Every structure is written in structure tokens, then in C-alpha cells.
Length: 62
Image (cartoon, rainbow, N blue to C red; front, side, top):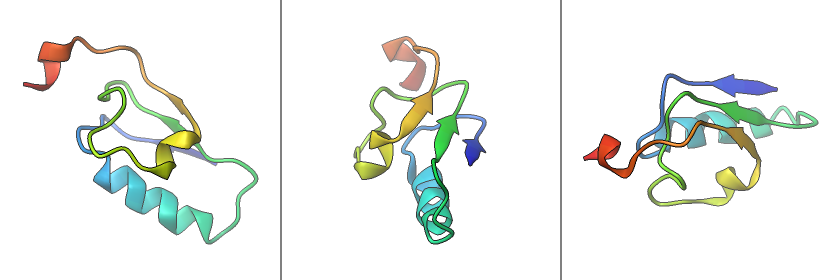
């Protein structure tokens, strides 16, 4: 399963989506976003999965 979002600031929406998908027991969940904090604020176990996001400058999120 590949989840794509337009960007992650807090990661709350992606976390909710991943939690819902886990109930379907997919073999793997991959997260792909064009911009994200690294790691997202309030990191949680959701980020232990495979994820792809290009590096963003620290000032991008201010």
C-alpha cells in the first residue's frame, strides 16, 4: 500500500490514515510526500515504516 500526501507538517492526518489501513493488514505501507519535517513533529511508530520525502530546509517550516 502506498500513501501519498501533498506534505506533512505534524503528520496527524497521515498517522490517522496509516492506523486505518493497518486494520486491512497490508503487507507493507509506504509513505511518499514531497515535503515533510524530518522527523515529523511528535514522532510516533508510524514513522518506523518505509517513507520517502526529499530533505527540506529548516526554515521551510517556520
